[in-house]
Image (cartoon, rainbow, N blue to C red):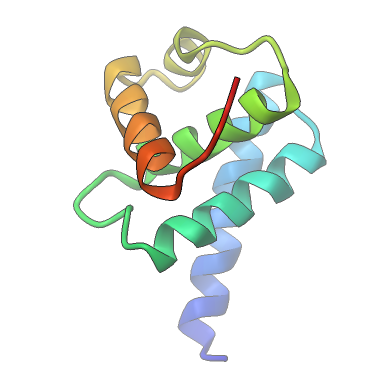
Length: 102
């Protein structure tokens, strides 16, 4: 494993952890979101998009799976990002990976 992957993996995990802490989510959400991000990388779903939107969509997927009461507007307020862009990335992630989320 190259050091570039380890460094980027560390950065991604820290960014996800920061997003989760701003939303009051635990370490289980961090791990789940990181796994979703690795799937995004395998299917090249993160190319051409801001990393923050992709990571936010991954955290949102984990929130939906766990049934936590977080909405896209919560992500928008906590991270000061456009909720419509997060929603667009989420919908693309859901359709391309075939995620069945309530």
